Image (cartoon, rainbow, N blue to C red):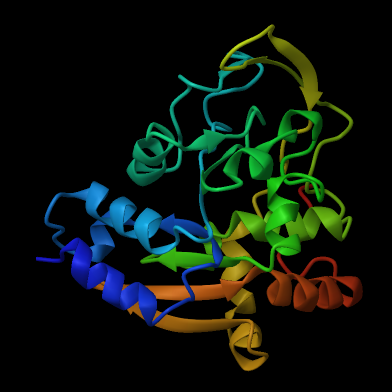
Length: 249
């Protein structure tokens, strides 16, 4: 049975407490937790209290042409139980991007997620996804592989890889903010899922020091430097834009 105290000890071995971290996770991979999923969230927010904790709170599976309304406070997450629990916690701020939102906890969490509703692609460079690079953040992949690394969709987007984002057929979506008037905008969806090929980069990132392996609970953890991995992949994608697959015909 893993307790908050044991998870805190393991987190100390992974990263400094003032780091910015984005976590993708499989709660089941951690093994038994004393108070369930909240034990991990308690440990994360306590340990990184001098930094920033972020989780993806995507709604791309449920906010679409047929159901175009994204409610920042109410729309459920489509990528797992931990992000869903996290977004509802006191002090957590969720971005207003209607399909690829991020929730964050920390002293400057509100600033970190602010303005994403003005970014009309899924992972724009001036969105929270780009701020992970600016902050020299780390991705913690707890019990999951690189195919869960949404940040790499951003890297492909910044590298202008063809056939990844449908800018010609954006969706007209409605954002219901926590307060104030609704926001209506046009947002380009992804049109090709390259994520299943992201694990191709694992050996390269390990060799070049952009990724290392650790443990948390029973889970294997991939600790990925957002800045280092982006720099490496931007370099590679310049030579081979279709490292992660060809565009859909």
